[in-house]
Image: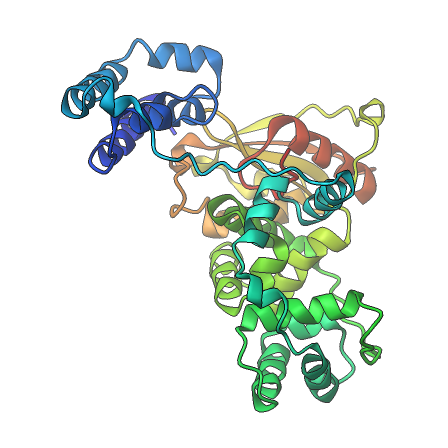
Length: 376
C-alpha cells in the first residue's frame, strides 16, 4: 500500500472515531498513542512515521483533536473512559500454563486470556461430558476426534447425535468439549482405527495458513476456536477456497497440521540459519510462472513496504501458478498486484526440514502479514 494511501486511511479512521468519542482524551490516545495508536500501527518504521508528521494529513489530525478539546473542554474532556485493562495477579504455575497453551495455539497470552474470559462461567461447569462421549462413540466410525471435529460430514452427524441425546449447547462448546475429553483421564473414548492422511499438502497448505492467519489477525481467534465453531470454520473455508480450489476437509486438515507438525514448533538456533539469497523475480502483475524453476525452494511476496507471505515448496513454478490463479486477495487491505513483487530462491538439494528452518526464522524476523506465527 502506498504511503499516501496509508496516510489517508489514518485520517478516515480518525474522522470515524471523532464522531463517536465522549472526550478528546480517548481520541488522542487512540490516534496518537506511541505504542498502540493508529499512527504507530500504520507507520511502525521510524523514518516513515517521521515523514508522516510532516504531511497535511497529520496537520488534519491535530486540528481534529483541537476541535474536540474545544467541544468537550480541555480539563473535563481530558479524562478518558475506562481503558478496558484489568490487572490480574496469577500464580506462576497458571501463567506458565497460559504461556504454553498460547504458544501451542499461535496466539498471544492476552488473546488466549480474553477468549477464555469471554465465555460465561456457566459454560465451563454444566456440560454433560458423558453424553458428548456417548455421541462420539456412536458416530465416530473409527475416525479420530480431530477428524470428527474438522470433517463437515462427520461433525454434522456428531452434533446431530448430541442434540438427539438432549444436549442444548452450542456447536462450539460441544466440539471444544470433545477435544477436552480426549485429554481427560476420567472419560474414555474409543480408539480410532482409521488414519486420515493427505500427501499433497504442498498444493494447498499455504492457503490454509493464510486463512488461519487472517482470522487470527482480525478476530484474535485460536486454531481450536476457528475449527470448533461451525460458522467460523465456514469463514475459514471461504477464505481458503478463494486462494485454491480444494475440498473443505483437506483445507481444514492442513490448518490443523499447522499445529501438529512444524509450523508452531520451536525453531532451531539462529546459528543453524540457512544462507539464502532471495532473487527478485519482479512485479506479480507481469510475472510469467513458466519463467520460474521447477525445483524446491523458498519465496516471499512483498508489497511496497513489507513482506506479505513467505513459503517453502517442492516446486516453485507450480506453487506460484497456484498463487496467481487467485492473485493476492483483493478483499484484504494490502494494496494491488501492481504493488506486489516476488522474491525467491531455488534450493533443489535441500530437505523440507532445512527449508522450513529458513521459513520459521524469516517469519520470526520479518513478520509477514499472512503467515501463521507466534505472537509475542
